[in-house]
Length: 249
View 1 (cartoon, one colour):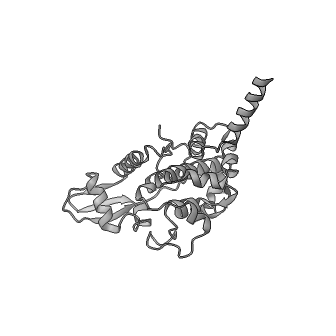
View 2 (cartoon, rainbow, N blue to C red):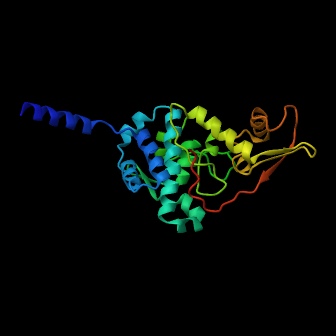
């Protein structure tokens, strides 16, 4: 009897422990990748998360970036596999509050532009931020915008970066790899014409990248262009075709 009581007490203590929400976001990605039926369980865990516990766990930008990148990619893949027809109206798909985090309804735009881009206004190419952001954004948003997140977010399109399992302990290395992989695969330099072609998302969010000067510096650091050149920028077209199996091992 004494052993049984001890076991029950220990079980209750374990059940009372806060859930590891970053780990849940990682498991959510794994479930989406392999098409496992328990994706619904992770959606429910995220929806029913304790907001205070979540805030206490997301204590720095590395944790926030890993959690919200995983959440964005997981939600996108989950929603479009469940109903691909949603992609026919992309604007509604990104703006509709179809997901729940700790009891709060939110959209993919809330995650991307609110939390990860620090309350940036969507259609201002990274130039303006909300003067009065919602309370939820102020609670969960990053302290500093990191342009590399643009090479990690998968919106379901063929031109999107692949979905990857982001770990806060390795996130800077992972984001560096994601940036290098995407840009070296999509950017090119025509030496004769002195034209640098880069992904169009670098135009959509050019303020995040530091405008032309910042874009050139990024491409110089990655050896896409040599130093001391000032090429004309041109942008590659974006392929919005639906592509849901874009996972990186």
